[in-house]
Amino acid sequence: MSKLKIAVQKSGRLHDDSMTILKDVGISIDNGKDQLKASAKNFPLEVFYLRNGDIPQYLKDGVVDAAIIGENVLIEKGNGISVIEKLGFSSCKVSIAVPKSSNYKSIIDLEGKRIATSYPNTVNQFLNQNNVNAKLHIINGSVEIAPNIGLADAIVDIVSSGSTLFKNGLKEVDILLQSQAVLAVSPLINSENQNILNKLQFRLQSVLRGRQ
Ligand code: PRP
Ligand code: MG
Image (tube, rainbow, N blue to C red):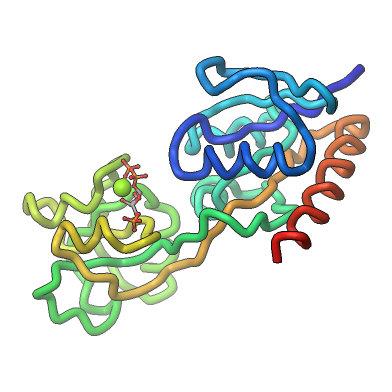
């Protein structure tokens, strides 16, 4: 019998809540995240534990049928991937932050400046919309350190509690987008697995209603 292949974050801020929502819909998964793949005991589902940034490509290629993923990651690299359900957890923003002492008034103030980010497409789109030219430094993590080491004048990164900004002497000055965990589907899913996904989505919807 066919199984729905679903990607979840291997580790990081979405992992635990992703596993909890699968448990809450009554799906029990055999093993922990040390293995990269696990099967559900009581539902035709295989879980693949993947790096966040790799998930959009796996969806595009149809390597997985669906994913629980941050909307921000899909916006950055998931063009053509549909979101079928917002899951209501792991809310965050993708924001511009600058040193506390900066007198940033608007995005225009970043003309000709250096911006460090892990979200170059999202930033470029925002810059283009506002007719601002800036130089991007693409880094994969610990972006908030960049202004302190003289690498950038501003950053664009995820803000959740705001504590990472605070600890690094930065302040949030503009919000590019709001994000949360979503259920996304591959454009290449076959009809058998689409039926399984429909059942999963139906169960998720009733859990989400119960959480409200
Ligand atoms: C994320 C993100 C921010 C921080 C935001 O980093 O890149 O740095 O969390 O959360 P906060 O507003 O609650 O402080 P993460 O710790 O996941 O690691 P990374 O930057 O190395 O990917
Ligand atoms: Mg970080």
